[in-house]
Image 1 (cartoon, one colour):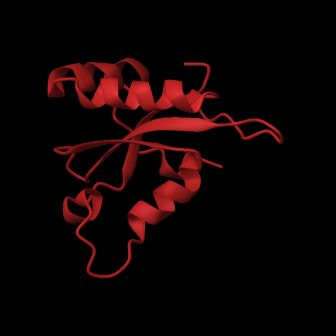
Image 2 (cartoon, rainbow, N blue to C red; image 1 turned 180 degrees about the horizontal axis):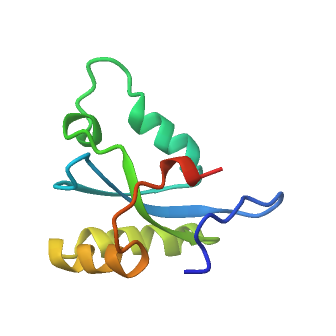
Image 3 (cartoon, one colour; image 1 turned 45 degrees about the vertical axis):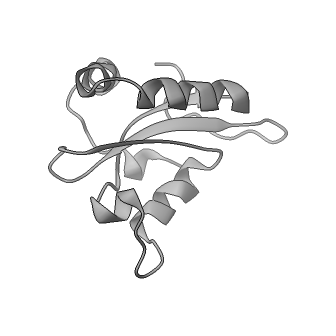
Length: 108
């Protein structure tokens, strides 16, 4: 995928649809953001006593993302992926990240 690890360029709009999992890779969370690194930090460092899905299920590990320059396309893609079955999400991830490696440290 050409859009992996794409840097943000001045004057452009950058949006990311991403999938997180927990340490045991049993839970999947799909989201959209314009600041992937910041959002990963937020997921790993939530406010105390939060009831967010990612905190509750310990979904902090980035295993997939797509890059968009149009926010409407990114939101539509997020909704599409959220509607996928677990198997279809797994196939999507495996096509880009066959070992389900955690990419958190690769995002700049």
